[in-house]
Length: 316
Image 1 (cartoon, rainbow, N blue to C red):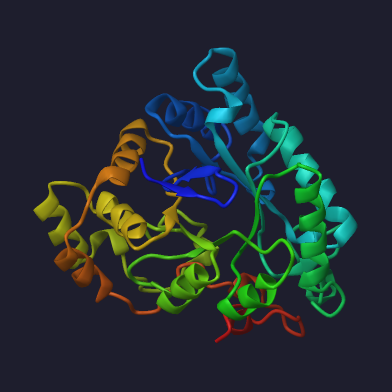
Image 2 (cartoon, rainbow, N blue to C red; image 1 turned 180 degrees about the vertical axis):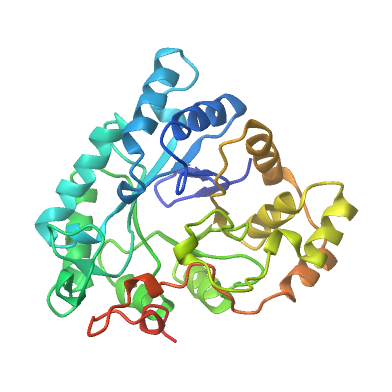
């Protein structure tokens, strides 16, 4: 396994287990199986609705001596209805309690979008709070306070564009990680390079094309990343799966990556990809696949008269 080392010496495994879309009744067993196989990095979020079940799996793993808390890197994310400064700690403590741990290794602002405290999924424009009403700087002040309290060892952002990341870089406690959609069809090289220049680690979500995301998030005639001819050819040359090629590509270009699976065989295959090395030629062929295609478009935040058009989220 390869690691990213932070300034304080903490090390994050570059390949972790994503838990978005892991269904109730499956996610706990998947997490326990992943820990058995050797995963030590778990990516969670309050909005995924499964942190309590993950917490049960963690307690089982601790009780059985499979791992200790210090062996693990655990990430969670602040949901959009907790963006006011005083609410950040409330949201973080709720995840800590659900997961059954004393602290998080990393806490991220999930989206640069604010909604009213009593809203989870906004229905209309009246459910949103604009960034004039709740600036991201206010949310970040709450994140910094949580860091100073020791509730999390590191803080970062998710679904930010490079301009927003740069705006946060001058803070006394700047982001250390940015989690965004990254794969050969959406390489975001300027964002990846800009993050590295700022000393921020990019983490790739939906690295395999997110074919199991909700139907409401899918468009017509979407490309199938796992069935791409170039990806398949590289996989054949390496004697591995297409998924393993995509994960190795992500790590080799200097990002961490968090694939999701609930199947033991695929969990094992994904983990093995952390030790796969692609040739320069193979990396170049995969690099030529970029088409700026998003599987997670952000259009689910758009409401007539609302403050969050998707193009503005991405700075487009």
